[in-house]
Image 1 (cartoon, rainbow, N blue to C red):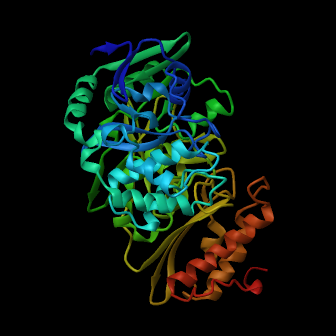
Image 2 (image 1 turned 180 degrees about the vertical axis):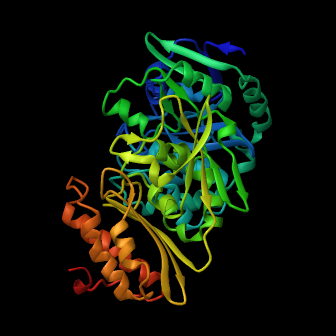
Image 3 (image 1 turned 30 degrees about the horizontal axis):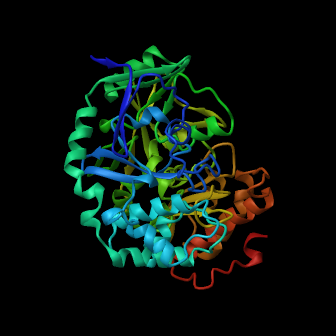
Length: 489
């Protein structure tokens, strides 16, 4: 096997080759400090505000895909074989402003201007992908961009105006797509990559099989998928992640398969790439899935990474536990499967050996005569971390609850099922009074903590109210969503 000791990628129209690069180095710092491309701003340094938004093009099964991502938490080794596009690369015909830029000027979409380049790049990604976006589509594209000046209305008008201008066929990323594909194919040479700056080392295996060998040789390594969490370990907690093993380039961890037993996602599948399969199999998550981060986070973050890091407030574990999902854990010893509910042992502790990695997630099809939904409660609707999240799956036969999986996040040190509430519900009539009794039983399942996201009292009240909301939605009686005090007192 060939090992390459440099990373290589394309920045705008320039080939970049770096032999000295550390695992913890961000694309944002490289752009600003090494290349003087200061249009990409640092606002939050945690993937939250979108001021650093750029596009990254990668070769995927469906061809060359460009996605908006956060440069502040995009780590340099993960760019190997990619095309990085910054706001400086945008231009219209004859050197004029790009249609998105011109629309922002015409519709007064910028005031202080700090966040504007990131907004332009998010709208540029939308402009290329969706030539005639609805207002809702524009709002989704802007979920990951915070603007404290304009109130978004002028920005939304600019996005709609840019779609009217059109011109996608003449854009550089479209006109030169075939040439860029050829360049990226040459860069993606199938080698393992091993680079470092001093003691800050990064390894990019060339396959899932190679990953097992790398982890066997480096059992203390940090596995990095989308870096939407790991990036914050670096920028906010100043943690040393070396040696870091990057897996976002592994196509054999990005498979999506639907079989008679359910849906199987490779652990490297991003939220964006998983969306179509998830929402086809589980349309009840149509409101839940787009609230996982913003577009930039969904483009980088992976379902497997959300599970593997064991966070008690991860978005996907409660709904996947409710669905009875299993995780595949792989090492040189082979692959074993564990129910997701059993993967989480305690805060910061998961059922995964040092040399194992989450390789896939298997999600069974919905059983017959079942009701299912997922919920996420946050301080602001979009691009926010959960205070409480939940996934509920209830089976009913002859108007009796025969099975219940009620899973919560944010209520304990791990995502977990509410066993007492489940026991209170099973065997009872499928009626609101039964769900009210189960809601009261939650007090025996959880003793949540208070923190800056929510108080313990609030979390307990919300957890109970969500059960009642679930029943009301399942029966079509949620017109007011009013929760009676006596139900949960």
